[in-house]
Amino acid sequence: MITRISTPFSYSSAVVAGDSVYLGLHRGFGNSFTEQIHDTFVHLKKTLLQVDVPLGNIVKVNVYLKYITDLPEMEQVFTEYFEKDKFPARMTSTTEFIDSDCLMMIDGVAYKGLQ
Image (cartoon, rainbow, N blue to C red; front, side, top):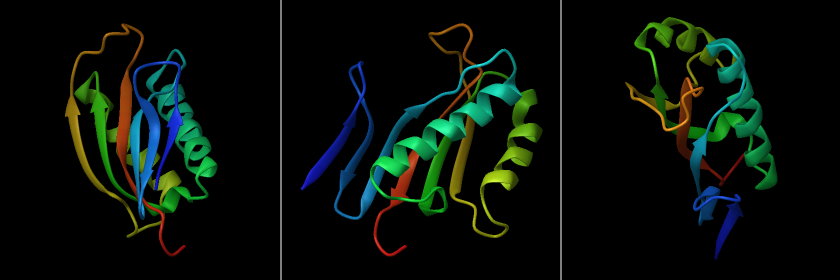
């Protein structure tokens, strides 16, 4: 069975297939990188809550930054949301975004199995 958490756009914020939860793009809002990354995690948690999966079950993320200079802060923020030595696998890259106010986005995969 496949379950989708739809958005008003042409993508799902999450798709559950078996024991995997595929997370579509999540971005936060705010005037600063700090505000946006914390808001992104708020949205990630809300999406995962809809499929009864804790944030700690994220196994892989891709983080897209507008500015590579935000990487040290991103690293610090991850330590606030994930336990030490229980970080998801991660790829971080830089890119331009369609929305000029967007400073970062995250997508990824979580495990729905044993919790």
